[in-house]
Amino acid sequence: MGSRRTWKSLVEEVVGRQPRLFSLANILQHADEFRAEYPANRFVEAKIRQSLQVLRNQGVLRFLGAGRYERLDNLPVFSAFFDPTLADGYTNRAQVARVLIETWAEMNLYCLRCSWDGLERLPPNTPVADFRCPECSTRYQLKAKDGRFGGLLIGAAYDATLYAVRAGLMPEYILTEFDTRRSMIVYADALPGAMIGEERIIPRRPLSTTARRAGWRGCNIDVAGLPTVAIVQPAETDRNDVRTRWRLLTPSTEMDEAEPQLPSEPPG
Ligand SMILES: [Zn+2]
Image (cartoon, rainbow, N blue to C red; front, side):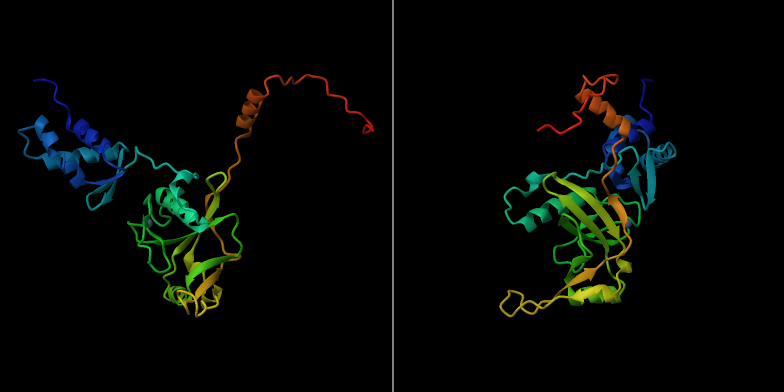
């Protein structure tokens, strides 16, 4: 007989073409490829399952239950930078920030409650929350600011927010401070929504009768002093790496050069 490929190597190759999260059904879609190699085998699904177990035991996969798997050889890449060209065509500063930061969040944020590595954007009119974990349904509200946050966040509608607090339905807050000049997120902190009590929801003045949404009342959320967990923060660069780069930039620097003599009196 010629050298037939093993089931494990066949399955491994198909797994290698899957996204990070996939299901048994995704692998079974390739059943024809397995049958081409093993036309007489009547237990294709059983052989696939067996091979997936081998890959799990080797640390290539993780079983998530209900026929779903996660590849561990395909780690998510996190970036603090956003792509400023995404906002081409927008002139309103608030809209520019919204497009840039929401896209960044969609590509980089992950669930804090479970091990899911992505969040899905909720429909635009969802009260109080912007994102949700597709795995555990934890909801998140993204707040973004070009610069630093003070102790107050601009909240959604007052009544809806108060209702969410009383019903224990406040989302987790992701506070994102960005720098448009450098196209980067400088800080992103996660703040537990359950720590925001009713007394921290401060009503704003209702919109005037001439406004498009006359009578609508928003709120501010006082988050001063509440604890947060850092998702993005400026990191110190390794000092030896800094020294190496510095020496490369200034190659003529001699360590043993005589110290330059400064005039003892300012001239003039
Ligand atoms: Zn989750």
